[in-house]
Image 1 (cartoon, one colour):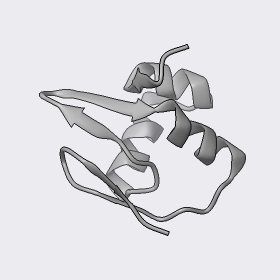
Image 2: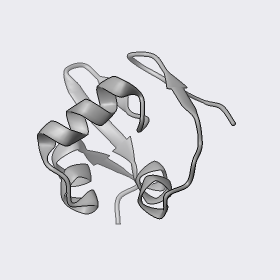
Image 3: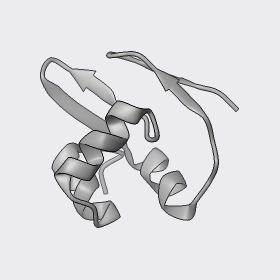
Image 4: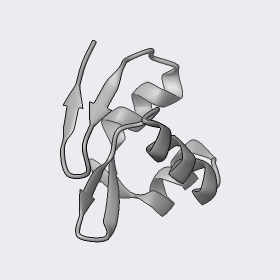
Length: 68
């Protein structure tokens, strides 16, 4: 199992549409990393989201900065 997944893989894992994943990315409700034009999500973060964990994430275009 990969630790980092693409937007399509993340959407499938969470059973969400690509559009919803983009909305969540834009609103900051789920952390992501961007490399070039590609967007990646950490499975650990997806699991936290899936379990309903209420963590606050702040990030910029290239690097995640987690807060609590």
